[in-house]
Length: 296
Image (cartoon, rainbow, N blue to C red; front, side, top):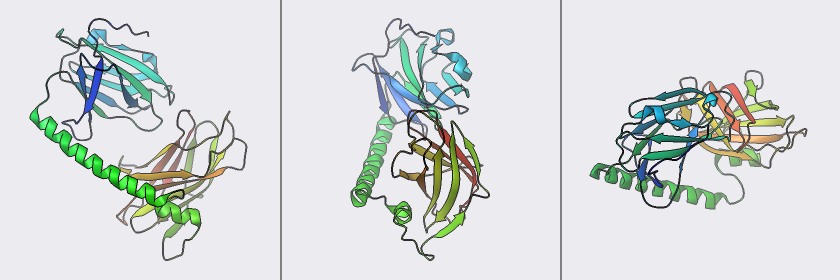
């Protein structure tokens, strides 16, 4: 469906701190630099947009709505669930109109399909912010600065070679007392998209981290495959924090395959699994999911 912007569209969308933990907050303003906020959605996962103003429910326009299994427009909410036909890397325009006629009259978003991740909750505001939201923004900014400093320190120390548990695996300098190893090829299950396979899978654990070391085959495809991201999710839905996804080089189709190492935080020895590991490429549809992944 084509989108037609009518009236006073929000020409700037400022992203600030939210009042809901874990949510992203977007502020709409009628002036400023023109821009459209990008929102991550994923097949089968729900994304909820919460507005501080009532919507004209009949005027919501979504490009290619047949690619969504659910489009639920409420009084001041919009819930979206892409269907399995939505391809990673695709983008859909979303435009909606507000009920009260105040500026901005409409708002526009760009929904980007991700193979595994979706933004669960997004707050969208048109009105003035409270002192509490400014205070929260300061706290969030301080946390982000600290995180960036830690990440910069890690990157500088690692230089060209990977660090952490991945670095030990890469250098093959492991001893039996340093990490525990488990061979998973007989127990792991594989769900692949577009010709990917994993004939060899091992898992490792150190004192505070775990890693999955998989040999990935790319059987078909027009171009080499490279893992852009990964998730390690338990059956309960809880995810481990993935620290790095490492591979030496993109894996060409029809070749001998290549090694991919996924490292995650696991400070508790009780974190054993089973987990589901999903790997995906940056802009294409090719992904692979390894089920029943456990750690020693």
